[in-house]
Amino acid sequence: MLTTQNGLVLRERSLKENDKFLYILTDGSGLIEVAAKGVKKQNAKNASVSQPFCYAKYCLIESGGGFILNSAEPIRTFFNISRDMARFSLANYFAETALYVMTEEKPNNEVLRLILNCLHFLDTQSRDILLLKSIFEFRLMSEIGLIPNLLGCCDCLKYQAPLMQFDLRGGRLFCENCIGNRSLAEMEPLDTKLLHYLRYIALTDMKQLFSMNVQKEYLSTLSRITERYCEIQLGKKFATLDFFKTMMG
Image (cartoon, rainbow, N blue to C red; front, side):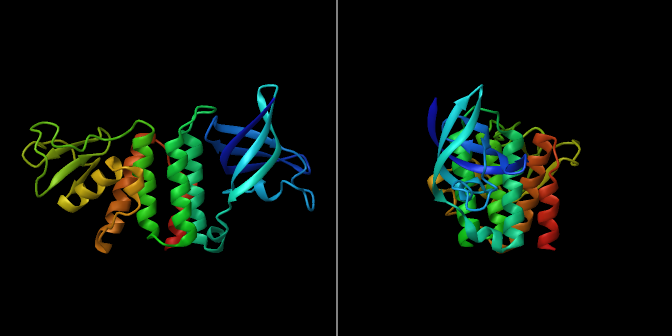
């Protein structure tokens, strides 16, 4: 049976001499594994659509509970990302994280949309690289059901204070009056600016998400907070993130 779906190649794996397995995040079937036969041959017709970060309309054959690539029409290739190692390594971090959190054959189109938007701005170099990292990490957690409660102090419900503590494991806020003698090991202090940025990433509509502006002096701190939240919530460290950090110096 033939099925046609739009999808983004997140990873490839060699299969025999001329074939590959592709891990594609699709709009209809979520994350799927696709056998791409003959694509490593010279002048193979499906070679260009069998590369990581290719977004295309894929015509697939469903066979034996799996998928085989029949043909595809490229929609976007994000070619410029590979010209810059820092941006390329960040794109690989996006892909590795998505592969870790996405359930096979369970679609989540908002996650697909998030990655495509992040890749677009990496490709065009029209947004700060650390801002894109923070947006991806924090919004991804929201889209997979790990959205923190940022509406106010979890004890007294105070919406805002000069300084609040963000509990990274519990995903909640404490004002200075309610923090008491709790350990700060998995807390991050938030002033009003940082709290606003996190609320914006987690809660704003995707159409406005990438129009946000963050003051330059906050970018590294915001990146650290979203990274720690992602790592603690998932209980996972990613090698691609470590490599990205070496590229950034």
